Length: 488
Image 1: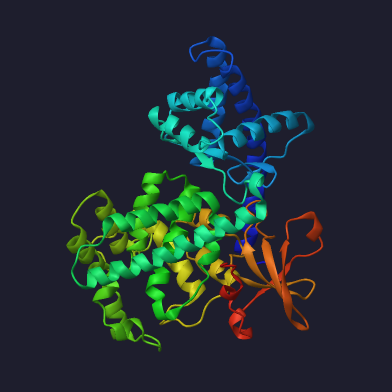
Image 2: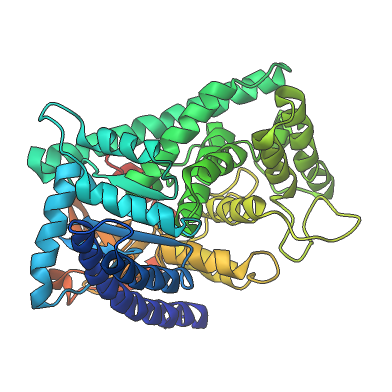
């Protein structure tokens, strides 16, 4: 039986889906009408102003529900904030218009952030309407982006069509290219963390330029294909746990912040802070970090010092600027709970900064999902969700946690599940529109491991009679989900 917290989440998800489905259809139609009006009239024309005002009111309504408006076309459907827009027959012509327009510019859609004012939105609409297509050899997306940059449009951001979505060059090839790029970015980030730690241990300054480049690459990868990056976070290697954990926390923090509507600048600052959140552990004895048995009180007393050491390390190796101050706040506060508890102990209780609240959720989730060196038992997906939901309001910001769970799903990527047909599968992707029915990789049946992995989207009509029966502990059956990641 589904536990009460999950039922609440499912009910809220259903209500949100219905709400965004209606808002999505209204936005779909209104945005089209505004573009058509902009193609005929100037921005100061009363007809355009009247139409644009209706669109602005609708956008404002969407912002009351979410801090970001994401309108994209992928996998044959249009989505508003990851919720599928259910088109009616008369809307098909509008859909063809958007598909043609997006294809010309090599975009899958765009994001509007809550800080966007009416002038920015108007400038984007007219840019989208009147953009002159380049020669065949030119990069349409880059030229369009340059046009927006020249107009100082910062809070309306086109989303570059991912290799997975670009059907013109072959879906399979592009999907593989996206995965290869994600893999390279992920492992490069691990190497950069290793370099950072080596530099910090030696008292040298951190290579800021290199660190920022890899963080920006991770931000771009999250925006382009978040599911591939999230799948990589199920990798576990206790020999370099600190490196992998830091990158995993960075990915999960960026994922949450992206769904909160952070712009690229804030995502980059958060990425740097989350990548450095545990850097204070370089001042702890290696025997403590790698201790195979449970920690005693003296061990914990030392471990609780790493946030303080983190601030000192960043200050020593970086100096002070906006990025480093935010990174220091994350390092110091990521173990302080939303009600002011946790560690280090504060003389006066206060709420940790937003970045630290985000990293705290990502850090806790990854720790329980992978098993720390001093916490060998890895919790299963639904157990983690229940544990964290029960700590909402005391340890975690309830709103941030809700967005996080809606993003990673009730059955997070890497969960080992038993299906109602007795098959064993690993969750490979979540379905934002249907948290109960993710994409899974079937690896075994009652007779044992299958020679060939079968991928099933449980939300599809073809799999309507298949569902997840329960989550199982893969460690008990020697199943490591990381072995089933496609890294080629």
